[in-house]
Image (cartoon, rainbow over all chains, first blue to last red; front, side):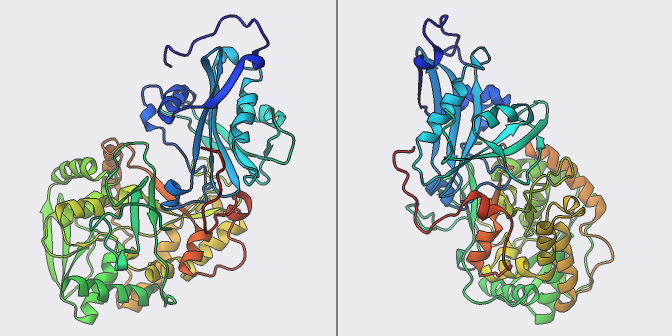
Length: 181
Length: 339
């Protein structure tokens, strides 16, 4: 983690009112989100997109032509505290990849707010959003409007270099439902 | 799939009409420049109905030989080489066989009237070559390195014993040997395999690195053959055996067992490839992966999209891909302000 990202001063106003979400350059994004995947020092190995066990419907040069990757971050008083990215896996579906909130700012609604912001950047043509949730986060994402994809169960996942393996499950949210924000 | 890419001239895969292509991000045919680049492959459309894998393989052999006037058929112990030897012999093609014995262990070679060039080398010499190959070609695959090793020691037009067509079922969790999701099938193209294409192009080495991708019809014939259809049906139907067959490896071997006699070859009594060679190459591959960072990428081509491109009718329903994850239109979508 860079020294740029540190704990802001004690909140004087409600946190979400001070939160600013916006795009981030990919190089910066992957360097700062690397801890999520235990890839500090190896951020240059993080690719902009992943296939996600057969989610990606584009192929060949479409991967360069058709896929738009939007790395985003949330900042409190100018200091970044949360990151995610979102990209299209087809002409109708989006993939949220990596939702990382600094430990000291978790359970404040920041992640949920950032996810809503990321999804809202896309035209309504993209009517569904997928993510892979670690087992321990499934209930959290349910509260955000996601549901486990029908017929899908937990599968093996090793999050990064030298990290302990765990289980993940695929979840979906249709955008005509109430906003998670 | 056109676009505004600068068309790279010659290097890269040599297939009929250059229908098979690979690249990274917006670049065609070259080498990986960063570990985060996205690797991709593409296949051309069929220009006629495929006529089955045996007939299409024979056609491909004739066309490939016509490109070079003769062929050096590399034999690394795979069924491709056995089939190629049989076809070349039966059709009287100008061809010879090149094989390699590592520490005296040679892949099984069928009896043949063709000239055979046997290269004897210590395994250590091959391993050293493979390390250099991994770094230069961006391929951490020991089998691909072996194909390059054979090509490097023969100056004839190289026909690699390499690059089988493989389908995978994304619904299977290989680590847990379970099937946590419905069938979702894709053609898996490992970046490591096209390391041979990159190496041959750089070395100016004549030949064909991907004989089984020579034509779109040959690719279609392999995908649509009865064993592959059977594997696809089993993956989509679910059932207790599905998790034990996460890819089409067994179907691929079954296809070869069916077509080798048609091509005039006997099915070898020993497994493909030789178990001892397989074990040594597996160990070497583990070491090579560290020397080709990012080169372990795999491009997955959703089967329903590839089938559409190749004109293969697999019947209704090909897994959850299209229905769940959405479609890809003929023209790019309107991104609005996104990205």
